[in-house]
Amino acid sequence: MFFVRTASERDLAQVSALLSATWHATYDTLYGADKVSEINARRHSVPALKEWLARKDSEFVVADDGKAFAGMGYAAMAEDRPKTAVLHQLSVLPDYQRQGIGRDMFAELETCFPDAETMRLHVEKDNLLAVSFFERLGFATIGETVDDFAAGIAMLILEKRLDF
Image 1: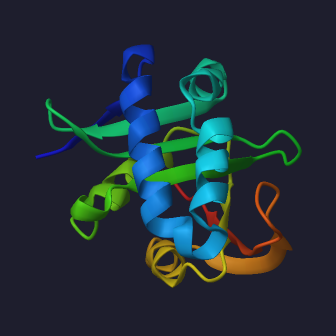
Image 2: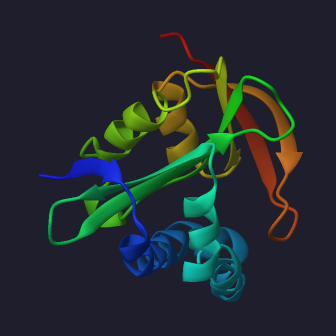
C-alpha cells in the first residue's frame, strides 16, 4: 500500500528517476525519446527538483510504500494569478496507474492551498488518458496554449474550482 507524504531532499534522486521513466513512457511518442531525455535533464534533474522543494508556496508529495515510489506530485501558487494554485506535475509509474494513487496524491495537493480558489494545469491535448483523468477529478477545459518546453505541442488549459 502506498502512502502520500511530503517529499524531502533525500527523495529527489528517486523522484528524478521516476519522472524520467514516466515521461519516457508517456511522451516519447509525442516529443521523441531524445527530446524527452533533454526535458528530463533540464526539468527533472536533482538540482531542478531541489528548486521545487525550496519554494515556500508549494507542496511536493510522493506516493511511498516504504520500499519504492509509485508517483509524485508538485503544485505551487501561481506567480501571476492571485488565488490560483498550479498543478505542475502529477506522475504515476505506468505499472501503478489506475490504482487510485494519482487521485490520492491530487486529493492531498488540492488541500494544501487554503488561499486558492482554483487550481489550474496544462496537459498535452493528445494525452487523452491524462485529460480524462483530470476531467474525472473535476477539471474543465478553459482554453488552449502551446507548450513552453518542447516543440510547440498543443496543450489544454484545465481548471478546477477549489471548494472547501
